[in-house]
Image (cartoon, rainbow, N blue to C red; front, top):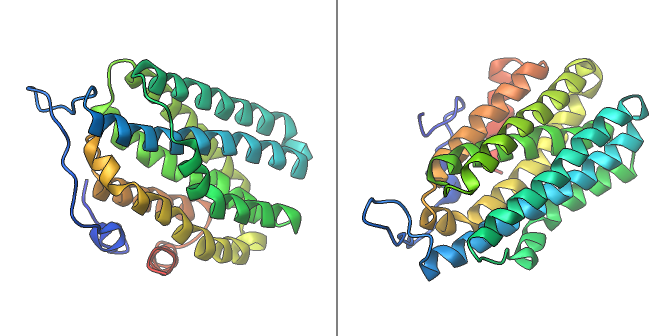
Length: 251
């Protein structure tokens, strides 16, 4: 995978932090899951994962009320997100680590507030973009990046969750594609608001990701590539999608 998206955004410019923190490694070069450095970093990252999945559960329930024709399907997707939160909490418990829920709620607060604002003013496309495109693309990129360095207990759980998140992303793409002419402007507007907020969560965890063996540059590149693909899938031309992504991710 390259470390630039199709719109030539350099991930290093988006998430640069100094100085990087190195992982404590075992003899085989893998992160030492028993080290205190790893445990603290894992607790912060797992907290973000658990809170993100919990909020996704609530978001899908709100979408079920807003889109009653798809209510049963959206409630099913929301239930899956709730299950993910419990399963991923077990990954932390298996390591004897407590997720940093307080920090995670602080990091997610701006994005969750944007979703609530869209919901309150009846901006259903905005809600769908936030949860079904932005959050799901971010989750897919994050779980793919984590999977190669996951511990033996977390690996099958992460793989199963990753498969589910792809299904959730598909729902959002189909819904928006069917209404693209009517929702194009709303999609562009919410992207410009929500994508910088999402990158803020990533920036806060750059050092922690490195400690547990993840590559934040690869993650942001994967996220950008996946999100641009989603924009093109719902109806944007490739150049238009690239420009929108560049504007949003460098805002």
